[in-house]
Length: 265
Image (cartoon, rainbow, N blue to C red; front, side):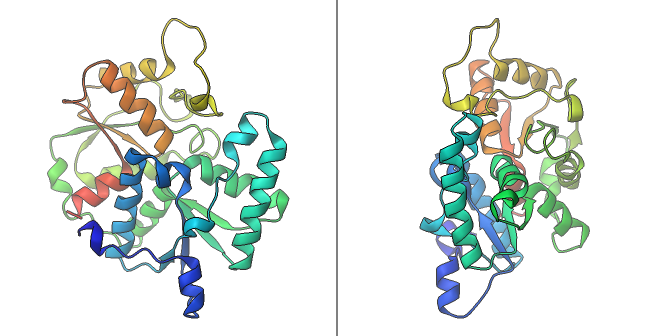
C-alpha cells in the first residue's frame, strides 16, 4: 500500500459529513513531527486502512498532551494544555482513543480524568493484540522473520506505569521469530533514558549513558531486531545501536512497523 493511497480523515471532516469514527488515533508530537516516528504513524495507519477500521485524527487540532511539561515540573503549562485538548475531545464526543505513544497513553488515560477528560484509552500494542485475538488481524507474512531473533524493550510508561508487558510480546509472537529477553525485562526492565522529560535535558554525569547500557543488554541477546513500542525509546535505542556501530546488523523497529512489514503493506 503506497503512502499516497492512505486514507487519514480528520474528526472535522467526518463531522461535516455527519459521520463518527470508531476510534480517534492520537498521533502525538513525535508521531507527527519526528521523521523516524512518522514511519510508525504511517505503519499503523496502513494497518487501520487494511482492516477498514473507521478512525480519524484531530490533525491541526491535536496539541501536546502536556506530559513533558508536567514531568519537567511546569504544572501550569500541563493543565493549560490538557484542558485545551479536553475541550476539543469532548466537543467531538470522543469515546475511544488509540495511540502509538506510551507517554500520550499514560497521560490521556491516567491524568486527564482529573481534569474532566474521561475516555477509553488504548495503546497500540494492546489494540493490535486485540485485533489478533479477535481474528481480525492475521499475520500471514510472518514467515519473513523466520530465523530472526527479536528482543523487546519495555517502555517505562507502558510497563512500569501501566503494567502492560504481555500485549507487545503476544504481537511479536505472531511473527514466527525467536523472541528472546534481555536480562532486565518486564517489571525489572531498564529505562532507555528518555522518560520523565529526560530526553529534553542535558545528560547528567555518569560512567555510561543509560541508553548505551540498555543497548548493551539488547546486544547480549544476539538479537537481529530490537522491538520497541514507544517513539522516545525508538530514538534512544537507535542512537545506542549507532554508537556501537551495529546499525547494519541490528535494526530497531516499532511493533506496528513489524506487523505492517509482515503484511507487505
